Image (cartoon, rainbow over all chains, first blue to last red; front, side, top):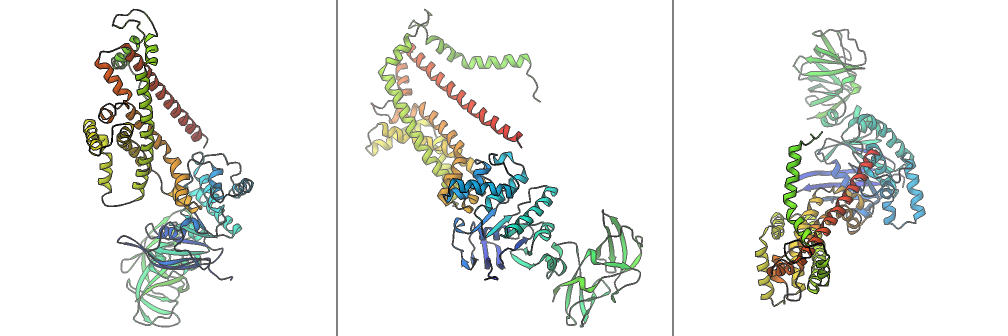
Length: 355
Length: 267
């Protein structure tokens, strides 16, 4: 039973008229996971969430919760609750009635409701706010009420649709920590939507990178960041440089001749003649007069720019492509225009495309 | 900041108001004249006493109130249902249908009146309170519909979705969430509809039966035999009622605004 997924998306398609919004997505989510759907706007992540909640019906495919097919159940019959993007607190009800609403629908006893609402308000750190109207709350407070309201039925899965999108950066960082702590305390499965990579990396146990209606990659934040499997996953998260070339020689570490001029090694066995695209993070690249790891990638330093905490260096390769390097050392030994060699540890790069 | 109005513009505003209200002021003054004619002969309540003992006027006033109440209630029901239904569905002739349903607001009343008369006499329905209610309901519906519809357009669908998500069935969500949120618009439309029904002469004239005359028709027919001060008294009372209604309404609105402002400050 331990490994029974709490939620299974089984090959889900969704069309809105002519537009295909979801093109066959499948995903198993285990109990207690904090999973983030990460992608640019319009990639289908909100639609996915709405299909799980039952606010939208899939054109094809099934949604299973605890092994039960809920595809045809209306939203009120599903053991999931949602924190909406703009919170959607009922404007004509005070905080108490907003949180209590789901319980009054179930005809719970007054004392039971009172006790639960009080406990939830403590949980989201808003004790004593019962009588306030939503219009009297700040963005962060509304956010907490919306979370409390969605948790009142103790759902198996909590869906959160860009819940921090409307908050300023500082509050957002604070809420990220609070949400994560809350989730660890409750052990409820969280499915979280965002287009903010930092948020995703910071909070999730797993990230599903979405693009144009399908999953590009599903994995832990570390896997996604260090070993992206597609060009999109690599470039959507973090600062990635993508270099293309052709494998010259297969080996423990295969040798790749870059289109831009130069030779690198990748940490994979790939047949000679295969075209590859290699992604390497800006902070993993090094440069010096003498190369390392057997690389031969000559370049010229275009410019340095100090952006607080790190030095960002742009280097132009022989073929003209610019690559971006960030280094913790604010002072570089090489001035603008210096000819250098670029290299990195092949373990830190990932092959994101081969053809 | 608004600029303070100069004395010239102040004077102008008061002058315009004076000219606008002059006829009504005259009516009010003459309602207290003890003479039947236009010479002032002293203050008296005579015409008010006459008015209240005039069985025709009292009966037609009752008719008008009953008529306004029923047609307004029906218009609330049908107009709201129509607006909600239209907001939920999407079909090709929707725009056309919407415009057609607003027609009664724009058509000349005389045409509507004639149409109703023709319809009722062709289908052998005797002119009575029933025909009045049917006709009034028809031209009252658009006032409710337009108000509710524009409120619904601005209503975030997420409220209802949130209610569904928390376990409310579709009808429960409508009752708990949509209805309270559109209530002010329904009220607005109903007030307008009530006023429209209360003062309608033209349409009522065509479809009222002999025993179901309305107050405006009664006033109109009394005027045919010359202005009696009794009508002045009636007009004065109606003016008073309207002013009181407006005052109540503004007070209500001011209270809501004040509460809202206090809430904003509470942030």
